[in-house]
Length: 323
Image (cartoon, rainbow, N blue to C red):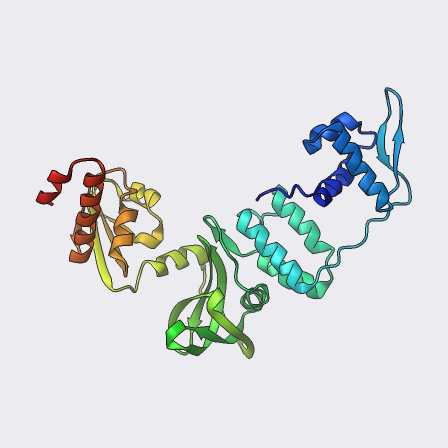
């Protein structure tokens, strides 16, 4: 995450340094802040103007320290602010749910001093599992309601926005919320469709908690189940033969790109579905070994089109005629 270099942020950082290192000198303060000594003294002045009793002592053993009488105000977060903070930390740090790590430990301290009505949903969201680089989060209040329902095992009625197809009401058992590559998903059982469903949280417009409860599948791994679901149910049936053992193929490609089945000790069949052959073939180029597209024809056509563009870019336009 980018650092805030505003004067206010640096003044707060100065206060933190004074509290953690009583007697810190101006040159050390400047070094920690990444500024000149003159600028460091200016930030000390900002703190004094704000009423913080910063004392200074001259001489070889002198320096700055915070005087007696300072009382740090309690944390005053609204529920929405607390949830947004937790979600932002999750996006930048995938170990935020681990209380033994530095990020998880710091976040846990914040959650522990929040009032109970704010802390409970914030703590639930903190335990959401994440994978990959994150992007824009959905509405914090909606996300918290889904996570809390999954924790309490309460059935929900949700309004799911299908875009041009309108909004569909659904009754679901919310098994888990997971974050994968910039998207927040609700993994659930839909009583409306009588099938497992993965819903994008940013498309859930309304959430209503119902009376019924549920029991999630035993041994459920939200991220593995999510990735398996994202690999199935699309228009084109994909079959690719890869010249490598299945365990290596599974390391090179995410589960969402298909299921790796060993044909023998050195060859693997990759089975998946996709709606976007052009996108899928670009993912296959991550394989560092030879592979052959068995099906569908649309995927082979996309691979040939990509090969023509690459050969042209490499300065060999005449070689594309044989593709």
